[in-house]
Structure formats: C-alpha cells, structure tokens
Image 1 (cartoon, rainbow, N blue to C red):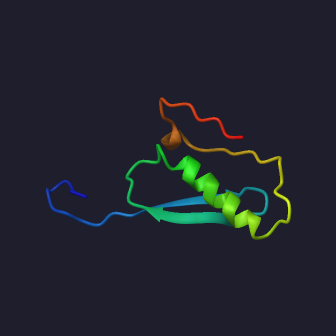
Image 2: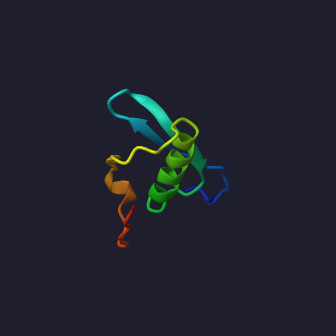
Length: 79
C-alpha cells in the first residue's frame, strides 16, 4: 500500500470478535483491507467456524454490534 509520502509499506489491520459478557476473543484475523466495509461477513463466518469446533449444535441466539466502520450502502442479511 502507498503511504502519504508515496512509498510502499506493509499495512495490516486486525479484525476481532469479542464476547461482551465473558470478555474473551472468539475470532480474530489480519487483513490488508484498510477499511472495515467488507470485513463483517468474513468475521462472522470465521466465528461460526470457530464455534463449530466447540459446540455440537450451533447456538441460534447471536446478536452482533459493529461500529460505523463496517457500514456500507449494501444491505446484508444474515440468517
């Protein structure tokens, strides 16, 4: 990625999902995408994969809260 001085540099951005009640990290990964616009769905998919290794049957009552950085003009519906 080009920085402000026009030089190439490696930039990485962390994405994490935290259980608000238990305060533990449930999912994390690194991306080179400088905005969060398209990272919510991959984050949730990784969370589901992580939880499948723990639970025999997936819980059905998930609630998500994301900041405005994840907002786009496109509408996503998660089932």
